[in-house]
Image (cartoon, rainbow, N blue to C red; front, side, top):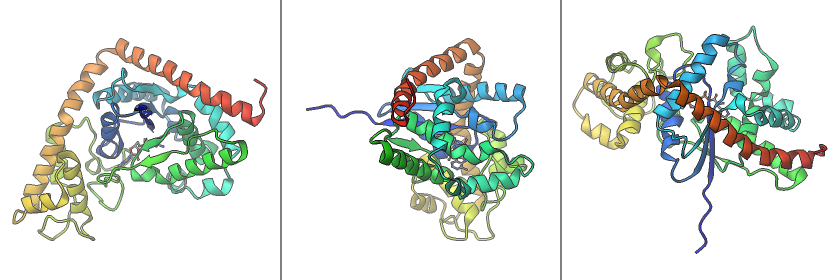
Amino acid sequence: MEQQKKKVILSGIQPTGIFTLGNYIGAVKNWATMQDEFHCAYMLADLHAITVRQDPKAFREQTLSCCALLLACGLDPEKSVVFIQSQVPAHAELSWILSCYTQFGELSRMTQFKDKSARHADNVNAGLFTYPSLMAADILLYQADLVPVGADQKQHLELTRDIANRFNGIYGNVFKVPDGYIPKVGARIMSLADPTKKMSKSDDNPNACISILDKPEVIVKKFKRAVTDSDMEVCYREGKDGINNLMTIYSAVTGLTLDQITADFAGRGYGDFKTAVGEAVAEELRPIREAYDRFMSDRASLEACYHQGAERAARLAERTMQKVKKKVGFIL
Ligand code: TYM
């Protein structure tokens, strides 16, 4: 029997700070589990990160920390291509080409652009606007079949598909048209302080967000303070945003269904439930924090990992670049 070809996975995360529990549950946790079944490439999207002003020294340190974090979350550089986006020039190159096949109107409709330009009104730069063309380049360069991301990236993925289809429509079959791979549970983890808002690194309220390197006692304390409602019942229902969020988190880390959670906590108050969620999250993250410290203390291995990753990524990307350049009519 002919062996089925492994599908290709590409995803990325901005190295703008320590990952949040949202990043972990919505994306990174799933990346590690996909490594055996698929050909995976995972990158730190540092080109995307400079659409918001970064302090160069802190940015360099954060990128290194995030590289160690990816490894601590279980990415294995022997199995997956783990790399830093700016070290593979083809991303910026293809991004420019694709921006010539992306419409102003399409980019104007992106909700992330609208949100970020409102938040950084003093720096609404062209990169913030063309950010989705760069993301399309990231994905299409590797001919990815699947892109594991949280729900907030869905609109960018749809635009990537539109760009790929448009390009293929003009030049023939150049790009694989990718599908999103959005988890059923945990695609949108909400703030602990305001469960109508997405959990985000940039939240000013430290209690709103769990960093995956938070110490166990800090994690438990933040969950105890999580905003819920005046009801008493642990059940997933419209209008119970805080409890829905805690149930989602608990389900994602324990594997229990929402119904099982409701049954387990029947007749018990929110206090018990919040403590259980905090403890389960702290246990899930404990090995990551320990592994992170190990990876950070061995800079030489970390450097070898991302250099080797960039070389492998560049080789894969170059195949697509050659095809694209030829199709567009550049002299090779
Ligand atoms: P970024 O860095 O904002 O987030 C990284 C991943 O984490 C997911 N995520 C969440 N999931 C659930 N709940 C949350 N509260 C939450 N917050 C973040 C995001 O959906 C994402 O999957 N543009 C991307 C990075 C990127 C990329 C790519 C992703 C660049 N090129 C190519 C996929 C493919 C971003 O800013 O993600």
